[in-house]
Length: 207
Image (cartoon, rainbow, N blue to C red; front, side, top):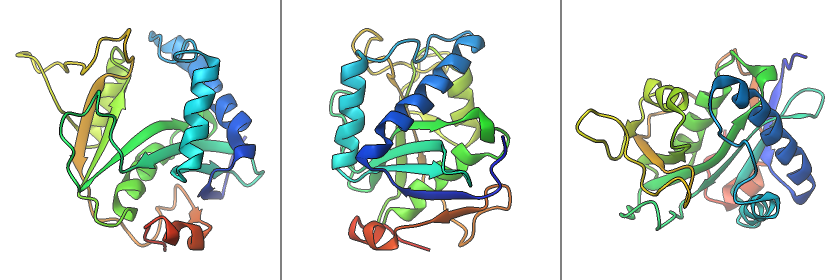
């Protein structure tokens, strides 16, 4: 399956089943990569659905759809930190959650473009932060490759999770400085934001 054109929009309640399906497909692939990330819904299926629904209520969840209407990516973005993870609370930070990109768009660097857009589009943001699965070194390397830094490391440079895995499995914290963004998306993405009125109301810069 290919998706020549991609559209980003605000998620709705009707998108919740598709978002969960997107997460589950990615989880199945992750199990082939030697990590237990998303091997089961955390803390359980009901809790996962509740977190997704809460993100929608805050108007901070976005989905990316292919030319056939099927979701190929999602990301939640907020100014509000999780105080159990992040000890400081800078006014210029935005936080990413549940960034998921389907394998059907692998190779187009959609995840990196979404991260970049999230930071650059949010007015006043100077840094972008994310908490990721504690024992997925491949994922840590991915974020390091796109210029994120670990918030805390040990003497060897390995990340130190903010919480034990049993308390919060995505305990490795990373952040980076928001970089200027291009006015058009790269050709590999063909990505069009929609719903400018809603984005404007949320304090987003639209293009």
